Length: 158
Image (cartoon, rainbow, N blue to C red; front, side, top):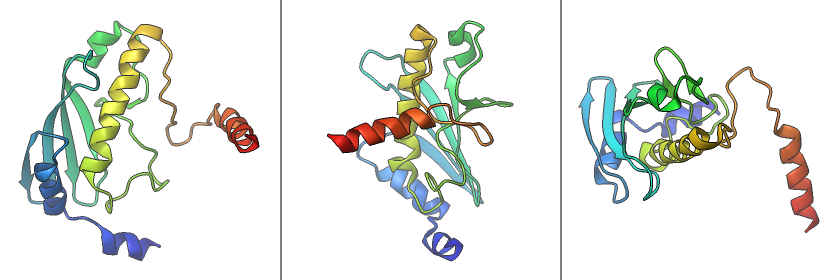
């Protein structure tokens, strides 16, 4: 299995080219030795504020996505930010090791849309104080697993 992932791994120049040529996203970036940086504006809905986002991918690394502006902590008004990695604050967009994202997958078709989706859940959380985006961090138990299993069972009964 590991060999197939390595064989299908997209290079940083390939990822950069996909980002540049995307018809659905826009932004600008820098491609350097072993590192890709892409900066883009994200406005997840027509009623949303605009966010300045930076995505960094190092060779053999995982995407590092940060909202540069506005300051998410300031928007949260002192509440702990949901569903992020800390020091520095980075968006938690997928669970590592599960195959949700690996280097064979295009950033423009995964990480960028997932960033918009995360921001939709964030904006809803700002109002409701309830994170509805699901997910979990490595090592955490998933309290919704039983609920998901129940929903799948009910769906099969239809």
